[in-house]
Image (cartoon, helix red, strand yellow):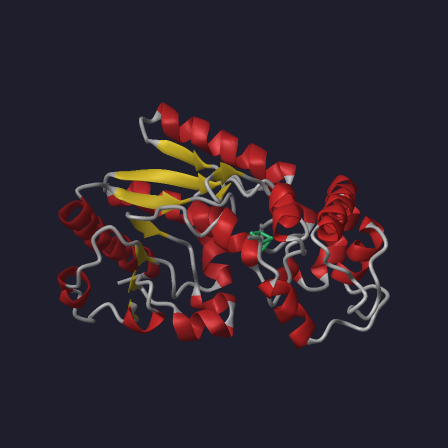
Length: 298
Ligand code: SF4
């Protein structure tokens, strides 16, 4: 069985489980990136019923927003239900910019609260499909599977890493109302993804032609040094972050939170920005960031 056939078999299995357990079709998560474009092709070729959902992070590059819009228009014309999931925090609509002010500190690699609010709730209570691949990182290789049953208690999550694993373990567990996940292209290499899209003449998100190898939020703390390229290409987002940090400092001061425990005090949003991207300071210690994470709102 080749990679495409294997992925389609996984989708068909997941589709059956989704209909049996949730009474609803599979939900394909679509980020506007190359892996999720592969998912849409596979779902179409498998003949299964499916819906598509996109998490609106509010910090995506304009190219991604337009690419998603174009794709949704195409899918909706074919009768496929497409949903844009807007982020909520404490029961109210939010955005990356509102969230930073509410949390009172910027998202960092260690305290990555933004993904949890802006992305990870999409598809709760459904069987979803994602484009996660083992080749993306060692962490994914060690923690992700072909099929996953989520659970609030991480020790009770079920991860099947082999197509022959007993899927009854998933279906017999009472995961109803929790999220279940199928990652049909988990064993694809990056070259497999590009080859498949090229052979199928699929138009990619224009960011890939601008030198990006991954598509995500502009200024993602997980981007490492690529964050400098992001802000060079999207200077308006840099300004947006600086203005957001200005507002965040006002809220911090109103809450009596001083910045004098930091290695470089924050006088204004520009200072926070420089600290955040690691420009002119000794990095915060892990303990400092943990303390910041504890400064939750009432
Ligand atoms: S900035 Fe990065 S970590 Fe935050 S929501 Fe976007 S992708 Fe996730």
